[in-house]
Structures are given as C-alpha cells and as structure tokens.
Amino acid sequence: MPAVKEIKVKSYLTKSNLPGSDFVINPYAGCPHACKYCYASFMKKFTGHEEDWGAFTDVKLCDEKIDLKKISGKNIFMSSVTDCYNPFEKKYRITESVLRQLRQSDCNLTICTKSDLILRDAEILKGIRNLTVAVSVNTLDENFKNDMDCASGISQRLSTLETLHSYGIRTVLFMSPIFPYITEWKDIMMTAKGYTDEFWLENLNLRGDFKDSILSYIKRKYPELYGKYTAIYLNGDNSYWTELSEKAEKFCLENGIAFKNLFHQSSFSHENTGKQKHTSKSENIQLNFFDLQNPE
Image (tube, rainbow, N blue to C red; front, side):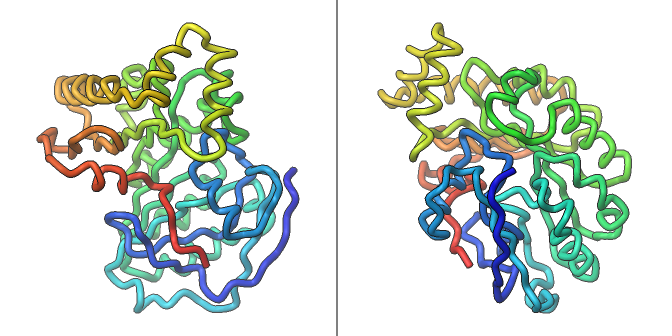
C-alpha cells in the first residue's frame, strides 16, 4: 500500500472551477488507485510529495462540520482529484462521515468513483435527495484495466452501477478516458444501458508526466496503433475525436441512450437530448473533471 499521512484541514469544501459545480470535496490527497493517465497527478505541485503518483495518500482530518447553509441549492462534486472511495476509506470512513452530513442538505451531489466500496454506504446514499453516482469505466478488458489502474475490476464496477440503479439512485457511466481504437465504447454502452441513466464520454488527453509513459505503453502493447497515437498526441490530428463524436451521437440516438460528450478537442458538446450545442474550444477543455482545482 502507498505511504499514508494524516493531515489537518480547515474544511472539506473547496470552491470549484468546474462548469456546473460550485464546490468540490476531496477527502484525500493522492490516490492509491494509481491510474496511469490520472490528470490529478498535478496535485504533487501543491502537496510537496516527491513520490510517484499513486505512491502516497494524505488523509484529510477536519474538526469543522460542513456548513449546510453555505451549500444549500449548490452543486457539489466528490471527488475531482482523488477517489473518495479509495482503499483507505475502509479504515478512515471520511467519505461516509461527509455523506452523513450531506444527507441533511438540499445540495445537488455528484459522486464519481472507480470502487465498489461505495455500496457500503448504500443506505446513506438512498437518503440523499439530489444524488448522481458516476462510475468510471473505459474498457471491458480486465487485463487492460489492470495495466492502467489498481481500482475495482470492471465487472465489479458494472455490478455496482446495476445495484445503485436498482436502489433508485441516478447512475452515470463515466467513460473516461476513452483510449483511441482501444475503448470498446459501443459494447460498453450496450452492456450497461439497462442500468445506466446517462453516459458521459471523455477523451484521453495526454499531458504532463504521464504523456511519455502512455505513449511508450501503446508502442509496447499495441504497436499497430502507435502511429495513430503519435498522429493524435504529437501531431495534433483531432479527426479521430471529430469522427467519434459523430458516430457516438448517431449510435446513442438510434439506441435511445442519454449521453453527454465531454471531449476536449471537439468543437461541440452533445447533451442528453441528442441536439448539438456549439461551444468554443476553451469551453470544451474546461469540461474535464480533473482540471486544476484550488487546493485546500
């Protein structure tokens, strides 16, 4: 397990730069899921950690209760730069404590996770009035998943979505990040459409320290795709995402699937009505759930 340290914070609430979110809650800094493509690895600049991303986790301890008046009617996102149900949550139960407080609020809460540990808190989740749970799935291939992260298996994640949906909780399958020519997006949708209220699609955006490592992985494990990846990520060819956006819209409309397109490089964003909404490139870039936050 990664190194763990307990730290004191003044509040679990952080004002958000995310479109549609007023506050984020990150009960931990760092994440033992150690996703190879994790956008949140930039947080090392603020935490002072020299370890590799995934090799450390700071557990945030806070004596102050959440100000429910402050978040009344607001949009809250858990979590933008960690997984609030990472393995340390089994011991520390900080997410559980936060949810018990939020159960008394009229905020709009979205939780995003890769862990089936969320089912531990099912009874609490049932009591939260305005709740969406997004489970991240970007492949049906357990071997590819294991190459990319240490979180729950794909079958466990899909089962978690199905169970939460059966409880009447609004469910989202967050297909992120989509790896070009690897993520089986149609198969994922058809597998989970019966228990998923909406699909969110986000592309793989290579930047920072993990860009070279991901490209090296593709060259080693998928040599036939390496030229296509260099075209996209070294030469700026965005045609794959434009074509995929059009294909996904057509497929979802034909199959009655609600979705949101969160692609960075595409020049448009699709809402669940299937209608095309034109936005600027900068607006689409900001849709990434793991873009820079104001750290505590």
